[in-house]
Length: 341
Image 1 (tube, one colour):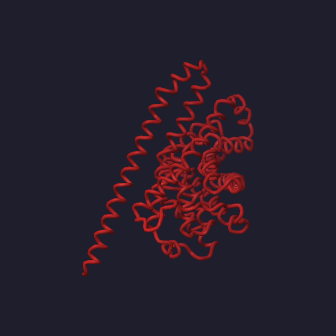
Image 2 (tube, rainbow, N blue to C red):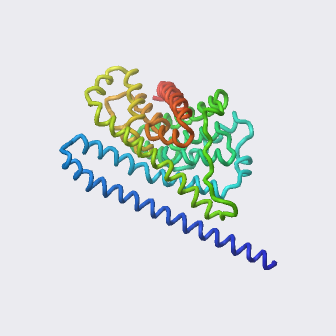
Image 3 (cartoon, rainbow, N blue to C red):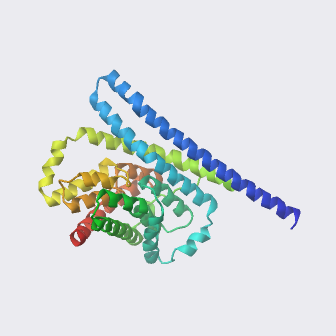
């Protein structure tokens, strides 16, 4: 082996070591940020509430920080995966794994969502990275919807929240995967290029190493998506303190209204997909199909996810895609609930 080959080998090893170190640093910094947010919520929130003499503000602050703290770890996970895809995975890998026919690529990408244990905050940057690497938008969007809804962590949490009810777990899996695949097919058939703003790759400069590309991608995606996570969390907290419980109780008497109500609540409550099954299980006054709709809609359409989609793919896309996804998820929940529950 020549000296040049030895030099290139040492350079590749050095890049790999730097990549691992940078990843660990960003993970540690993310953990520090989460701890800082928790400390602010614990100490500063009550102090501000006392200074302003506004108990509603204390309630708003509690919900806001709960949603942010719940979402930040998975947003960090998603941005790490996204940056790794952009820096390490060649485009030819995706062309080999996914069928060239979009009609076939969509269900394959939807089923692949089962391998990523994250929530909806993680799926948006990963889907954006897949599009940058040449994956068809329809397939990437199917992955975006399925990943937070059918991964093993979510299904195990659902089985624990509904002990002795395996059909509820099966219903969630079937309804969520069906929604993701149908939305992928709908986008392949009716989606327009001008509706979707493809995310741009972060500028890294010529001659940048893989470690540098990874760090640039991680910083860009995390800071960009984090701002929209905060905006969506603020909207969810505002709804929680402005809509009285008595208004929600009016809808429990009607099966159809209760399904629509919980589907809407899933949008505004912004509960993480790993925890929404326990919230659904606590809603014992509602029919099983209504609780299924809550669990199917939530990981695919909520305020923070809409904000993240708008920041990544544009407002025109987010409004159209989220509205259509909500309808398809609701219909899928009703059909699967009628079949299995």
